[in-house]
Amino acid sequence: MSASVAIAGVDSRITQIRGRIATLTRSSSGANTNGAVATGAVTGSAATFDPFGAAYQQALLQADRSSRTSSDESGGSSAGFSTGDNSSRVEGGVAVRVPGRAPRAPGVATAGVATAGDTTSSAGAATATGTPSAAGSGQSLSGTDVARMAYDAGFRGDDLVDVVAISKRESSWKPTAFNGNGATGDRSYGLMQINMIGSLGPARLQQFGLTSNDQLLDPQTNLNAAFVLYQRSGNSLQPWGGYKGMSNTFGTDVDAARQVVAAAGLADTA
Image (cartoon, rainbow, N blue to C red; front, side, top):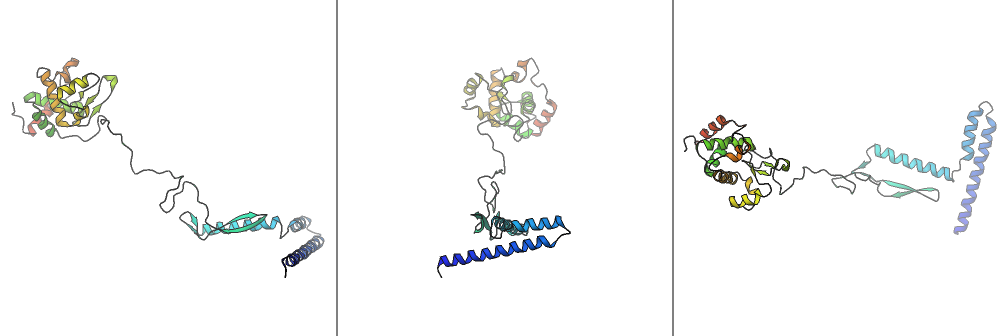
């Protein structure tokens, strides 16, 4: 049988089916005289329904969507894809089933793989480098450690006690303490908060025999530098209070510092 003969046969069969539907519609319309509203609803629907037209294809597409929705709700999808999914598209008014995977929404990660739309959070925050720690950050040393390092730097007697007290006030014994508040004239580093602002910095680096301000964040280096300032002030702690017209140990607990020095075994040092 040729293709043209086959097509003609199909067309003839479609014509017969449509004729029968029209006959049934007319019969249904004349049979019901007591329910005009219901009859009109059925008649209008039947009269406009063509099994081979756009309405039929739309119904097929809707049924296809409903089927896939039911499959998803019953656990038919995993890892962001429908299992055994078949998508649909309309070609020339006819719904066509197309094998393939259902699309995944942008920004949704599946099976541990991030998509281009993902936003990720890292397990931790980025930190700045090359910048001294803000005052109050870092781990504090023990008072006895500070006392021994101050002794090694050259401090003795009451001045040793005062240095332990002053360093507690200045940095809470935190080697990485830093005050960069230019408004108060500060760029101060370490245990004794040695100020390196402006022209002080280069001059003091030379006096201390250092090459970088950051070296003052080492506690022993800081106390060694403090001893240089102490000597250049006539063996006085005036740079830590007297220059302000105040006691060098203002805001400190000298008695507690004395106990710390004693605990470090340095109470009887001259």
